[in-house]
Length: 424
Image 1: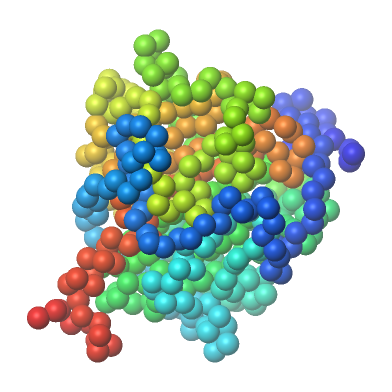
Image 2: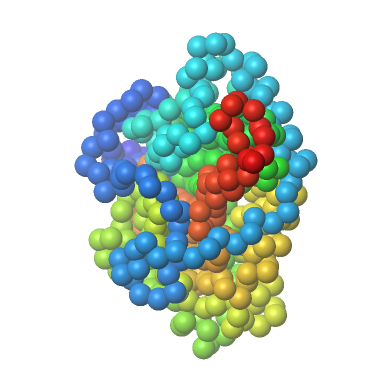
């Protein structure tokens, strides 16, 4: 057993949990490796795509295939659409011909859906950022900046830096690092045709689509282990704290009658959970990788049953995630979430305490959010803690990857001749 280490790399801070390092089989984050049995239950066919569906009642298996119309997408965001498109074009211009061939895929490629938030390279595609020149990596981070808010960008880059810090903590340079992330471009950047891009790697998956001057930024996964660094060059770095606090703040606002309704399980400690809620990759999260078509029932409390103060706190919690996106994109999605708040539910598992551990889910017609404390993967803590967090954001009812918007685009515009002309 290695020496005990805090999540942040210190051994003498009483405010930090002290964990050892978990032994595990080395699996490269750069070179392709076999999936192995742990991923057999995750990697599933991704087509046909229906998007996350919402069930009003009953277990998901009982309502498979049940759908409802997607809500309108909200107002266009031409400024962000142009900025993302310009950054995407700049990236392609900065690559060699061979790199452009490897980074680009058709806009309807199934590879868009084959992302995975764990560190091994089981099925990644595109260009490995670590193999790019400094200038080319600058173009990728420029695309990230254009596609995210300042806070969203800072958190994404901090997640990557913490992944680099894991090399120092664990000594496992082949598994971790700041730059073993893969970028792909789907379609050709332009404002007259759908296109998008993806970043895929450990604890960070971004999918961004531009279509008809709308910008879609889901599915998006952000996570980290550890989540706070207390020493060394990254001392003071902390990720996902606003997301942690937003759900806890709303849960604490519920009264003695509402809180039991919101709570689906009183504990997520390992000894208290059934096997299906203990998967080492997904934990309690229902909408993770290869779950684009999952059917999720409403559970917990509904927005329609909340007080004005509670409704404000629920919308604030939603906004914490929407604000990963640029301000104008976030404002469009926030307005839609506010309009549909009556139809939005909040459910909770775990302890209502600063350090939890807990899981919560927010589900509405325009947004799905999941937050989960995890047990250790790099570290050896057997119970979930705030040291390891997974978060997932999706747009239900066909909104992920801009699929519904792309469908509407092709119903309106004819691209068969290589030009962008209305159907006649």
